[in-house]
Amino acid sequence: MARKKNEDDDVTHIPGEPLPNPVWFKPVMVTFFLLGLVWILVFYLSGSQFPIPGINAWNLAIGGGLAFIGLIMATRWR
Image: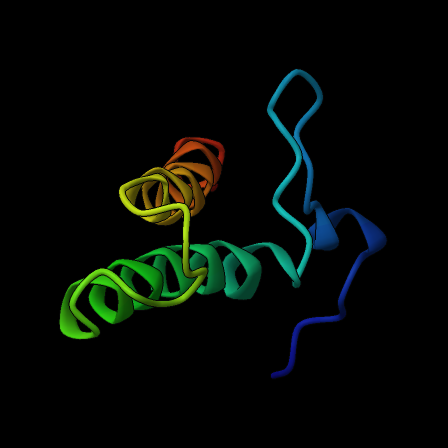
């Protein structure tokens, strides 16, 4: 015998618990991680000429900052 579904069966949020992340959160987080990694790889593989010529080691700071944003987002992922 099939059980009739109540509205109370669809409890998706318990009061006092943090809300789940939006659907876009995980792809954006992974994108920041990968973008930071690619930035640093391009810097090393190009012999310190790219992605932005002329700022030298600051390219590492930019790539690290992008990856750091991904890390901060990962701490907020539920």
